[in-house]
Length: 240
Image (cartoon, rainbow, N blue to C red; front, side, top):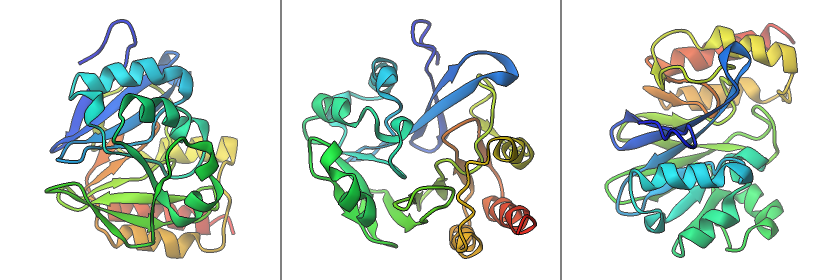
């Protein structure tokens, strides 16, 4: 499904999990912003998109469910593309609250019109039939407050800026290699914090044995997510 006005595509990448994909530009030099909508009794959106994309994101959500049904709006760490439209979404969804880790709740809460639900490392949030687990990942790839959500029933890791790939408009889900293009982008932009705990944190993420890596930029990956996370760890270790 593609809205011809906003060009935000909506694709189900795992059962009841929808990728909202907005490409900026065309071809290999394009960049894209993804959000992920998890349907359940208490629907959750992971990432808001930049504030200027809010009309497109809202329209995309509305093609799946009424925006007012949103209960949680989660983010990995504080950046414009992750939580820039938070207050607009909270205004559109009166029962929704931000969801983040404890550090983000401490340092970012003043940005939001509603107090966040702060999750500690390993804490599970029940959405109804689904359960999402928060995983602290400070400075991976950047941001003291960084963390991720793992959806247990589908094995989907909402992995934020890990495996960021250029280009837009490709199929939402792939089994092809996403590490090579993401590594090329990482080396050209050097947006990783190169934190000392990266190997341990990547192994913690790999231990969830994800079957889908829901990337925030580029394509989502379906396959052996644990192996790909460990390959990333080896690539980072090779630069030390």
